[in-house]
Amino acid sequence: MSASSPSRRNGLSRKTGHYLSNLVIVGVIRIALALPYAARVRGMGALTQWVIGPLAGYRRRALENLAMIWPDMPQSERSRIASGCLNNVGRTLIENYSAADFPARMANNKLTGEGATALEEAIASGQPVILVTGHYGNYEATRAALAARGLRVGGLYRQMKNPYFNAHYVKTMEAFGGPVFPQGRSGTAGFVRHLKDGGQLVLLFDQHVQGAPEFDFLGKPAKTATSAADLALRYGALLIPFYGIRRADGLTFDTELEAPIPPSDGHTMTRAITESLAARIKADPSQWFWIHRRWK
Image 1 (spheres, rainbow, N blue to C red):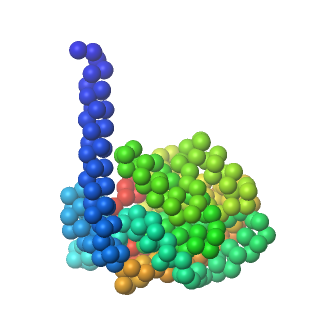
Image 2: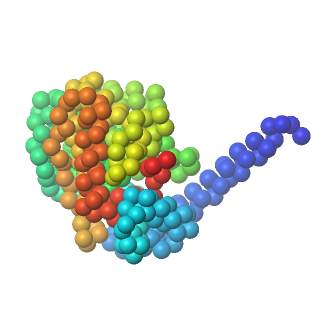
Image 3: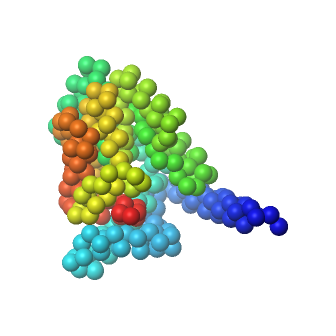
């Protein structure tokens, strides 16, 4: 037996696991998509909250993160937030797979906040714009609302570990009206070309990035890429924090664009967007994706 056999077996086992888990995910999504819109969104939220989240270990991770950030918070409140988080994750997933229904529902959504006017002025003058957000509410809600207004809003995404799931999830992002680019050299090149042409781009910044500088995030140090600010400074782009905030009915959103971050340096600007997201999380913790390994 060759020395590499265990490695090959592990690789085959991992590939098989990815394939089977993707089959299950695709099956659940197809069943959900056969339901009326409101039923599918509510149903996927409940399924993720009560079944998928606990089985996948997401609920445990959310509770661990909450206990680390807010150790003095009553356990019952942390449990409530974790449940709300999982429900929102499930709703977000199926909304983003509702390639016709979700953008149509967002088409007439009003864009609010100081950043809405700044965005219009930047488009009129040909200035590129980077719209930056976190995994809060549904981060695609605002992009869908902008795409409905005729904008080709591109996106930069982190490739998922499951290649089978990644392949069709990318197609859902492209269905929202703009090109999407994977993180890495080739993806960043396309991202930059779109930006230099005066385009608008969406970037999510709230995941752990190995080797990135640490910023205070909810009272704990978290490695955070400064790429959104660095790109804005390099190409003279407006940097606008934005949020798709889920309303109490669970089906509609406030699409808010905050005032642009003043240009200064990458560290200062990244601290500002981190503080912006932290304020949103404190206002409604259940809307943020506590399931991520944000602090390592």
